[in-house]
Each structure stands twice: as C-alpha cells, then as structure tokens.
Image 1 (spheres, one colour):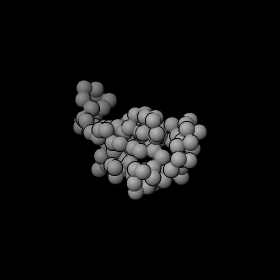
Image 2 (cartoon, helix red, strand yellow):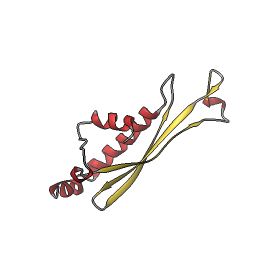
Image 3 (cartoon, helix red, strand yellow):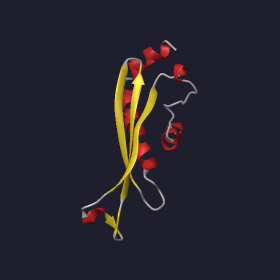
Image 4 (cartoon, one colour):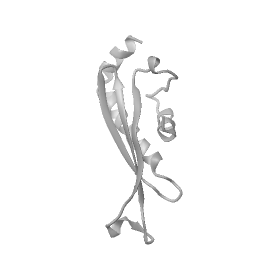
Length: 111
C-alpha cells in the first residue's frame, strides 16, 4: 500500500488496518499513482515555474461490492502532493463507508 495512504488511514478512527486480506472487511487496491506538471495556464505558474499535481487512484472491494476513488494533491515546497491526494481518497472512502455501513456490518459478521 502507498505509504501516504497507509499513514492517512492510520490517523482515522473509523479505519483499522489488518495484516491479511482474509481479516479485512474492505480491501483497497492502488490502481495508479502518478504526478504531472500543470502547463498552459499562467495561473498554474508560481514564481515562473509550473506546479506539479499528484494523483492517487484506488479500488475498494467489500464482499461483492466495488468502487473506485481518486484524489489529487498539488505539490508545495518539498511536498510531492501525494499526502494531499491520499487525504482526498480517505475523505471519499469515509463517505462511502458511512453510506454503506449496513452492508459493511453484514460482511464483518462473516469474518
């Protein structure tokens, strides 16, 4: 798992990381992680330099349910932007978990 995503999930009260997929109610798979430079718009330039943004895409699997989430984060200073992208993914995951809590409780009961 991407370190930034793991760190963000460890900070959440609603999430608990486990060592094995068999023990997990939700399995996250990192589908893509990449950085791109913003080009073209003068609003994307800071001090004459283009800014970098980082994207993180994950797939959630919970029983027979799947969903995909992505987050984008802008780099600032020495930051790569992946921490912000991971934070955006975790925010979306939390919304999904809250909206699907009954399904997740049913899956957890089988573990």
